[in-house]
Each structure stands twice: as structure tokens, then as C-alpha cells.
Image (cartoon, rainbow, N blue to C red; front, side):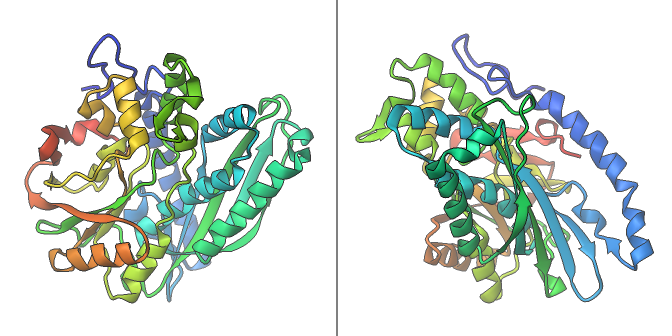
Length: 374
């Protein structure tokens, strides 16, 4: 069953914007299977992989006294919005773009219980001239360092190639890799403890984050004032899209210090709320409380004429991260997140039953068939 079928002739879907996960996901699955066969090489060094981390948001290696986790993520097309808004306003938005890039890696890394240790940068420009814009380049550097400071992570180094002919002139492709430590080993969160009765705590997003930008950019063609269209008093569509992605590692670190170990975590990025079905186990995820939708996401849904099912299958719709915790720890998890400046809600719970996500206030059901990541 396709989750991207337009609900009306005027609906703008993610697939129509040029992103078709039905084509991308089979490659991911094939790569995962090939990669799994290489895990045995670790034995030659006296180490071993954590098999349950295969297919998760970060890969985990058992090195004896602790685990190491690693991840690499690219930002995607959000830089194109920053570039267009720069032309329209004369401002640079690359400090926020830097945070977005680091968030893509760190928010994935922490899902397995890791403390981020080191970030590496990959900044591939369409030519050397990109780095000649001192304001923009300086914002990228200062924004990158600030995000590292927020997450208490070392910026180890990076690569800044000029790739004329591969990257379009005047553009930049940004990515980050991150290595983290799971220590003590009891912090490992790959879902082995997940089960019926666990609570689902959702953490607020700041906006679109860095997923769904292909759809958001395609939508500009329908707006008479384009990126400068006002979606709230004094707030343009372009500025709202460029709100930096939330960094969630301060929350997961605070939870650890408070003695709370999530049974599982999901970074709600591509595939929207379907990511809540990421764990391979057979559970029913019942949602009774839906966080408020941020204005820019509500605007996108309305202008793209998407029904709730299409919107929640693509965008984060106000929830950027999910924590699956023991029911007795749910309210305290919310309090700790709020103390870190991140709004949070006890949104639902797990039940025994078929693998499905039931968003009851919106009468939406996603099943196992709607998310194929393994």
C-alpha cells in the first residue's frame, strides 16, 4: 500500500516533489544486507558488533568495557532555502544550517543510548568561490562550533573539497559524522527491553527540521510571494523553514543523570511519524495525545492540500523525537525535557498486538507495510 497517493487532484505529495522512498528504501535494504556480512571483520581486532544495531539509526560496536556508536548523515536540500532567502533578504542563515547538519547526525546517534564524543565535518562546495564569501563561511564555522558546545562534543576535523561539476556552482553539500560512547553498557538502547505498557514520550520540534524540504521548496511554486509569503505576523515562510533543528542530546544526557534509561528511541525524520514503527517487534503503538503542529508545518499541509495521513507520513508535525520509557518514568521524562528547554508530552503507550501505529485523535493507522527499513 502506498502512503504517498495524493488524496485530491491538488495534493502535493513528497513523491511529486522528487523524493520516492519506494525507490530509495530497497537500495538501503540491499546495502544493509551487504554491510552485515562485513561485521565479522571486527573479530580480527577482538571486537564484535551489536547485531541489534543493524538497521537502527546508529551502528554499535562492543569494544569490551563499553560500546562505541557511529553515524554519518547529510543535511539534504535545506541549504537551497538558505541560499534563496539570502538573495531575497541579504541575510546569511548558515549558522542555523550548521546546527541542522550536526543535529542530523547527533539526533540519530543518541537513539542507541550514546553520548556524542566527536563530530567530523564534510563541506563540499561547487567551487572554491563558495568559501570566499567571508560572512557566510564564518557563520558556518561559528554555528558549527556553537552546536558542538551545546552538545558538549569535540569537533575533530573535516573535509572541504571544491567539487565543480559534481556540486552545482554556488552551492554546498553538507554532512557530518559522529562517534559516541555508550558507558556504562546498560545505557544501550536498541529495543531489547521495549514492551507492552511502555509509555511514548514525544519531544517538540522547532519546525520542519531538515526533512521534507523537497516538498517545502516545491510548494513555493504555488505561493504568489514565494518564500516571503507571511505565515504569521512578521514571519515569512522562508524564515520559518530555516528555524534550526532541535538538538536532543542535552535531554538524553539529562535523563541518564536522572537515572532514566529509555527502552527505545526514534528520531522522527524522513517517513514522518511512521518512524515510530521502526523497532522490528510486533507491538501496537496507541497515541492518545498529539502535540500542537508548528505553524510552518500547518501551513505546508494546508497549501499542499494534504490530508492528515499524508502529512503525518512525511513531516514531523510538531514532534521531532520519541522516547519509549517505563510508564512510571513518563511524567519525570517530560519534566526533565522541559527543564532542558524542550517541550514534551506523554503521547501514548505500547500494547501487545499487531504492528501498527494508531493516532487516535486523527483516526490515522499506519501498519508494518507503511515502513520498510530492513
